[in-house]
Structure formats: C-alpha cells, structure tokens
Image (cartoon, rainbow, N blue to C red; front, side):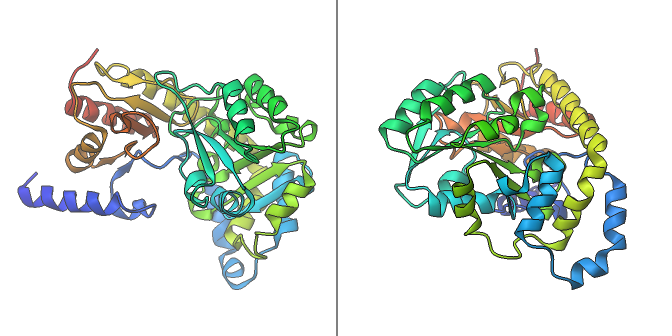
Length: 368
C-alpha cells in the first residue's frame, strides 16, 4: 500500500467511524453491524420488485393492521403488539417520554440511555470479568431508586451474553408490586442455542409488569426496512406507547415484508442455524489468538478483551480497517472499566471470519 493509498484509507476510516449506517456504499467487510446475512431469501426481493410501483405510489397501512401482521408472525394477539419504525422508535418513546426513572445494566445498547433526558437513568454496572447480571442486586437497586422502567437486553449488546430465563422470572417477581415495568430486549434471542426455552414470549400473559422489545433488523437481516415491535399484556402501557406513534410510521416495503414473512418460517429458522454455526466456528478461531479473552457468545457477535501486550481497541480497530479493509466496533465510550481494551466483532461468513482472525492475529500478535 502506497503512502497515498494509506492516507486515503485513513480518511475513509475517520469518516465512517462518525457514521451510523450506509456502510454498503464504501466497499469494505463490515464486522461492525449485526444482522443475518442469510435472510431474506432471494424470492422475497423478487416479490418486492413485482410490487414496486404500488409500494412507492400508495400509503401504507396503519398501526392496528401492522400489529395484526406481526401477531400472525409471532402467534400473539394483535392487541398486545405495538409496531415501531425499528426498535429505536419504541425506545425513544419509552426512554424519552414515558419513563420517569429508568435503570439498565451497563455496558449495554446505548440508545436506552441516549434517548432519556439527563438525570433520568441509573446505570447498574455489570462487573468484569464475568459481566453476568445479578438479578437480586439489580431488583434491589431498582426498588431503592424508585425506577418505573427496568431494562435488560438479553443476549446483551456488546457482551453477547444471555440472561437465563429463570433469572428473568425471578426479577419479574421481585419487581412485582413496585410499579416497575421490566422491558426485556430480545433482539438477538433468535441466535441463542435454545431460543424457544430462552424467550419470555410465552410468559407475557402471566406478567403484567413484563414488556418485550424486538428489533427485527438483527435476526431477519432487514436493517434498511426499519421494523421493531413491542409485546405486552399490559393494555395500559401499550396504549401509552401507541400515543407516541404517528399514523404511518412504517413504509410499504416494511409492510410487505411483514405480509410475506410467515411464508418463510423454515427459511428463517435455517438461516439462524447457519448464523449460529458460523458464529461457533468463529469463536473457536478467535480463541487461537494468544492472550485474547473471548467470551462465549449467545448472539451473532463476539465480545473480546485485548491482551495487555496489544494496542488499544481504537488503535486495533483503525489498523484493521486501514491495513485489511475490515471494520469492527471497539467499546471505548461504553460504560465499563477499561472500555478501550474491549472489542465487539460481528460474525459473517466462515471465509470472512477466517480472514478477520488472520488479520487480527497479524495486528495483536500471537497464536495458541
């Protein structure tokens, strides 16, 4: 690489690291954003092409009909569902306008904190080296601080660690009677090894203080369509969230995806299995890098701590991009001790994962 090419790649890195999407336009391997590479199938795109004139020229359906489409997909009554323009829209409504005091374990998905007014959030630290959530201590702090919204992301982002269902049920019990709604963000649950056992979807009717958030971008590979939903049996809470949704918050392309998705249940299940197989092999490969601490993942990405002899997370991330045209996320700025020592790496195809392992080994040195 010439000095001119190196400088151009550095400039591209500085630009992209300030952006929140549009990566596909810039010709690099994206191990930063988290989505399913194997879904939707090509036949879905062909059906979109067949309807493109109608989808562009006509108004989409509104909230009640959208909720019915999601309900058909997840086998839940539509009255329990609110559909958002991505989970981000729902997070903004709850964190920014409904919650008086919100508590969340950190590190976690930043948007819950970013969307809240200053002073409205309590950050409950997940302690290294395990980063496991102690639900008894978390409940006690939620009650002590009089939080009315508690959030748990499982599997968590960036740690990729699942909170066991039995712990979440215990947390629900502890919060019951304290006017605190538990929001469980299950955006990555479809990549957990025993998804049907891990999810709280079938517990909804038994717990009026439970709400599930789900971004469909991650599991269904539809980041550009912007679909998320909220599931709760608490009709009062659902109504408060619906008040913040405008009449046409989902476009016709997203609507069509929801209409067609039930036809692709097996394709979706198979795609998640392939993601998990790639992820597990990736995990094994990353463990071969001497000194790298690799956390066993429950989602489609892997959380790592750099060895003490290596450069920092931001430095490693920049070198991967400039020298190897691979982009990952470092965790500097996340709420955790020594955040600049941690990386979050999305799993892609086995060939791309292998290429990243070799590049990372080249940068930080060492092999097991």
